[in-house]
Length: 240
Image 1 (cartoon, one colour):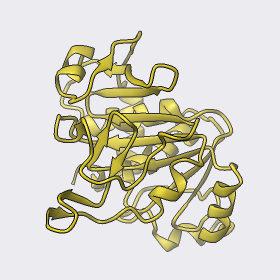
Image 2 (cartoon, rainbow, N blue to C red; image 1 turned 180 degrees about the vertical axis):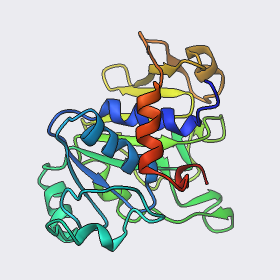
Image 3 (cartoon, rainbow, N blue to C red; image 1 turned 90 degrees about the vertical axis):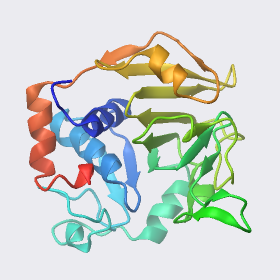
Image 4 (cartoon, helix red, strand yellow; image 1 turned 180 degrees about the horizontal axis):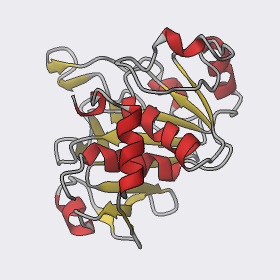
């Protein structure tokens, strides 16, 4: 891995899942999603349209700031207010959204609400905002988690903040060990990719539910890609 931050592999993994021409919505506090989107758009030239809580329509971004909702993003770009973006989501016109749940389970349920009992939780989390609304509606849900373990990829979440179980969309999980894809035909998760420092076995051993091996590709990072990420994040916000 040559001391490259694991999150940089997550960023490249996210960028690999974005397709040419995708409309991508980046929510609040989603720096991996934003950096992955910028890598797909500006490095790999996939021509995606970037929307989000900053209410800027495909802004030009030289470097990221602590908030993905930074209002300065809209200074040099058209404005796309949140109600209009959510209208596009309702109409099925947003291709991708990102979520960073604390727990993800084998049923595509995600938890951003509480750890433990809802009435007397061990930890009360930030909450789901529009998670329950957007998850079934967008064409592709990309979940990111920076510490792949049996505590984060669980058999059953403590609280269902949102789910894509009854939808027909694509669901992926990108972690610091690799990428999982939910196969709806088999109703199970499979390893889509791992990194040059991880393996399908390591992914399976650190996941509470069963994951199929599939035919995973290996993701590596070259110097140009690493330099691109560092230039976008000169203050290393992604690592803090």
